[in-house]
Length: 124
Length: 230
Image 1 (tube, each protein chain N blue to C red):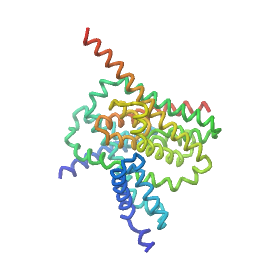
Image 2 (spheres, chains in turn purple, orange):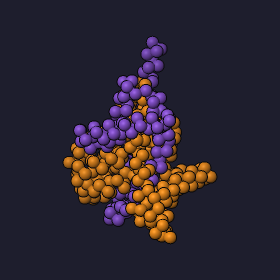
Image 3 (tube, chains in turn red, blue):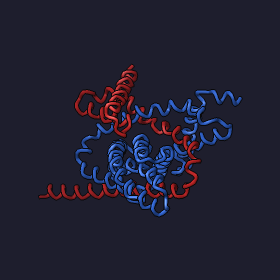
Image 4 (tube, rainbow over the protein chains, first blue to last red):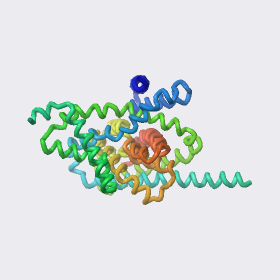
C-alpha cells in the first residue's frame, strides 16, 4: 500500500510539472519543472522525504533501462546522420571527454582551495 | 510467426530488459567498461529488430512504457538532491563555476570543431545542445532552427559515451572527489551520466542531478549567444 501512495505523490508532482510548463512555456522539460517543485516541497517541509523515499529510490535504480528505447531509436535517424557522420562522431567524442574532464578538474580545484583556506582559518 | 512479433506488446520490453541483464552478465564476466549494460542492451535490441525483422514502431509500442517512467524518475532525482542539500550549500561556488566551465567547454568545443570541419550553420546549431538532457536539448535545437532528430540522436550517443567512458575519463583527469565526479558526469552526459553517477554513490548522483538542471539552463542561454558567432 505504501508504494501506491508514494507513486501517487510522485505522479502528482509530474502532473504539477506539466501544469507549470503549460503556464510558463519555456524550453524546459516537464520533468525539470517537476523536479524543482518536488525539491521545493521537500525543502519547505510540505512533503516529507519518507512519503516518497522507497519508490523514488526504486525508480532511480531502474532508470538506465528507460533510456533503451531512445537508444534503439538511433535506428531511425542513422540516414539523417550519414552525410556528416565522421565530423559528428569526432565532435561528440571529443566534447564529451573534454566537458567531463574540465568540469571535474574545475570543481576539484576550487574545493581544494576552499579546504586549504578553511584549514588556515582553523589554524589561526 | 512474424505477425505475432509485430503485434506483441510485451516483446519490446522483454527484449530490452533481457538485453540489459545480458549486459550486466557480460560486464561481470569480463570487467570491461565497453560491456556497459545500457550499450549492450541497445545493440542487442537493434540486432534483434534487424534480424527478425521487426519495425521500430512495433518495438516502440511496448518500449514507450519504459520511456513513460522517465519523467517520474527524473522528478524523483529531487530526493537524493534533498538528502545532499548541505553539500550544495557548502560548495555552491565550486558547483556553479565548474558547471559553467563545462557548459562553455561544450559550446566552444562544438563551435571550434564545426569551423574546422566546415559544417553548415544548421548542423552547428543542431550540435550545440548535445551535452544536455534530451527535452531541453530538443527545445534549444528547435528554437535555433536545427535538425531536431539529429540533436536527439547525438544527445543519446553522448549520454551512452559518458556512461561507458565515464570512469575512464575521470581516472584520466585524476578526478577523485565525489562531488567533482558527479558534477562532471551530469554536465557532460546529462541523465544517462547521472544514472551512472548513481551507481558510484549517492553524493555523486545528487551532484550529477544538480548538474543536469544547471547545465541545461545555462545552455539555453549560452546556445542562443553561440548561435550568432558562426
